[in-house]
Image (cartoon, rainbow, N blue to C red):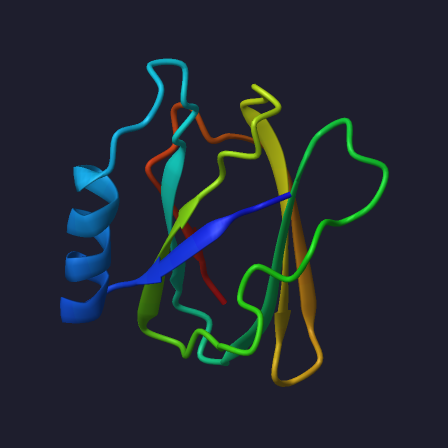
Amino acid sequence: MAFRAIKAGLGGAIAAAALAATTLPAAALDRWVTIVNNTGYTMVRFYASHRDAKTWEEDILGTDVLPSGRQVNINFDDRSGYCIFDFKAVFDDGDEVEVWNRNICELSTFTFNP
């Protein structure tokens, strides 16, 4: 699965403009959702898989982290056509939070709170 994450800020705005300038097929399934971390802890891993997946897909953050109070824009386009996704966040204190059945076709922002 190929998810793309763009961090908010000037670099994110430039990257988003570059993505918008590229020509995508009419059937492209761009499903952008802003993930917000308001937990008080740094998110060290973030996974998302469509509801019929048997396992969590790759860590979308990769080598990056998402500090508390920050956000990241993620394109959940996995070319599957699915709208219902499950999320899993892992934080620097070892806690893991799993969230099930989120409709990313209708959801523009999801916030992790304490």
